[in-house]
Image (spheres, one colour):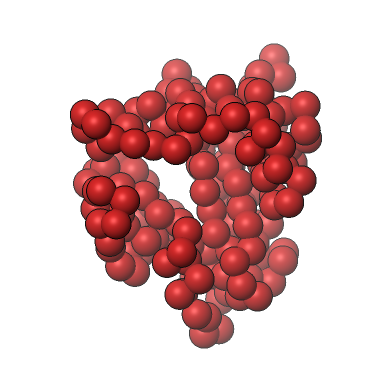
Length: 168
């Protein structure tokens, strides 16, 4: 059984551990020589995110963190989802879906019109996952050295400005 909850400062090392495991797979998909900042983040960055943004964790029945996601408001109407990772050993077991639903519920409760996120457009399984969760590709870019897709999920019918997500 998985418990989804808001992260606390004491969770930072465990969030970092699971993020590194998940983003190692992401880096492998990007190929040799890829640079993935999530693999180098110190715990202080996670602590800052917990203090300034909204971080959600998924714990297993033993209290061990198996996944996390971070959310920040980048405008009045737009939230940005980042560092979404699940321990590869428990992938396809509902942890990611539980975290993503908790993130969506949080964004709805805060009144956001949409959620944006970036991911590797060539990482087929990940792109397919987001499509299955009703996200769509808004645009792509290559400024990070790979084809990066900006995915968006509209939470209601209001108009919103997507441009703040370009900077993320």
